[in-house]
Length: 374
Image 1 (cartoon, rainbow, N blue to C red):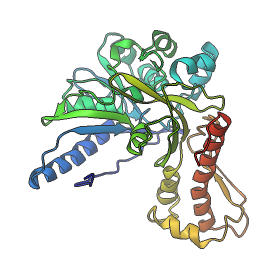
Image 2: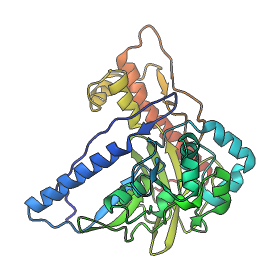
Image 3: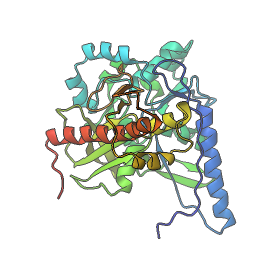
Image 4: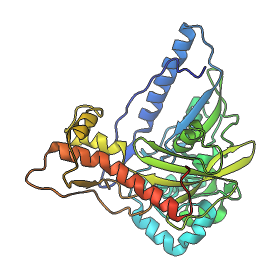
């Protein structure tokens, strides 16, 4: 019937080692996933249900490097929001013009994507590059790391949607691109095998893992954006707008991304995407760093109690700005402050910033020729 039976979720800590750096402890990722998966599995057993399959969705660009023999990561996961490779991206843009990169990957030169994260780890962990060249390390996004752990190292594979976010995968030809590997300095020895979104990814406790898609593509599939022209906008840590373009891999003139929407039975369906880095993360900032609210839900009553924003605006560039600006070095700013400005105005400005950023994405899509449906 489509009803949810058990559900389990856990937060884990965010790590901020330096300005613009964002990391996760890979073991925290693994432990929380294993714990929540086990909780749902045990509930099924206690209530007479038999799990038929496991599906995985993940933060697409978050990147890990781990030992092929032990499965232990050699460094923290570098999160999609991380900005540490901005200077490297600027240098790479001189070596390969963005138009050439877009033609292959649909992406831009930006630290958001996985390739420069992998190279940074290989260049900053003692001996890592030599071990990688010798085939002793595995590289991957968090889906491939989890699949490796769940299958006890039997499977090293992401799906095509996550591979399309690395800047190493040619989304038109469907393979890791040798020219891109050389450009970014990533040896092919540690790369996983890319599979369809519906495929054999091994088993956990005898249950097949057979559905894998990056978080935004999974949301688009879940909201039935399956035909050209279908569009979704979802709001989590960031905000992401995806427009299904069918068999056509379109190139944006307004700094949107071309990406793989899904690949099933070998058929690739493409999309245009606008990526906003800070949406729900702005509310987390209000709660955790600023202590302005106790829970995220407190923001609704605060916003509704004000008759306007009183001229207060937040640019939530805590991790730079994503589409359509792609400015990794920009930082957040609060404008329009007066002596009368209080907590409630800042809360409302934070929530409204999600709306303004989303408007910018839709405006960019309109300039690219997307038409709103009546």
